[in-house]
Length: 265
Ligand code: ATP
Ligand code: MG
Image (cartoon, rainbow, N blue to C red; front, side, top):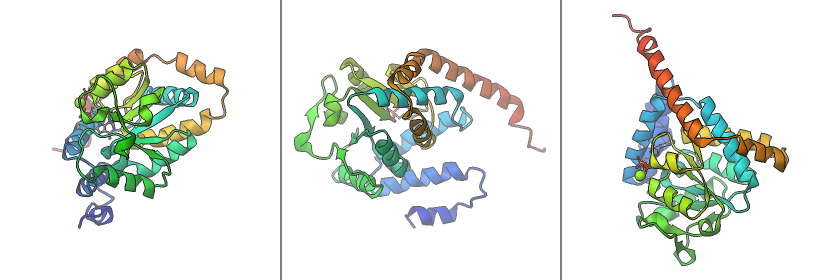
């Protein structure tokens, strides 16, 4: 019993945490298929924790960041979306749709290398319909300056002007920024180094963000350059993260009362 379908049968749809459990199983299946690193399970758990205190919804601040992110990608000369194991396991189909709508290629970039992992991720993306996938041929890769981890190996990213990094490690975000690249991060932790270093930080679950980005892309693609620039210039990342922290505080404050409403002693 390892496939998603089998696991889904074990979790009744009526379960109050069905969605959360469904994505856990996608991560577990991903680990069994080499797509997700063992540490990816722990990273997912950290994400779940932050999602809980955001109310497990895409907030208004996340929507603002999503608009600015999509506008920036549409304005960029050489944008790229970096893909790691967790993202490939959670939202491969949606990721490929987004990549096509925004005309922005995908590049596999991993913190943990294991024989066969890149190929496993490549297969998942191809099955989802991706035609061009960078980061799969070691002969074409070069080392990014200022980084010691495996994530320094890059292909298209080396000459990109904008890199979208869902579920990124802080070290690489910092290195990309030091190379003057615009960085868009998706990270449920508003206080991670990635969140703080990025130009645009989407504090949201990647499983909700990518579909929201697809919707935003369909809308913003119709706008001219001046309007897109206005959206980007009106966005202030520091303020947006601070507002996100306020939303978390407000949510927790409300839960002090609401969380007990359904409990009958
Ligand atoms: P940093 O290196 O940026 O300081 P970190 O070391 O605390 O962060 P990492 O393990 O490097 O964290 O990266 C994983 C990050 O991805 C965590 O901040 C976690 O909240 C986030 N994350 C995990 N799952 C998701 C998800 N489904 N959607 C969005 N973010 C997620
Ligand atoms: Mg880290």
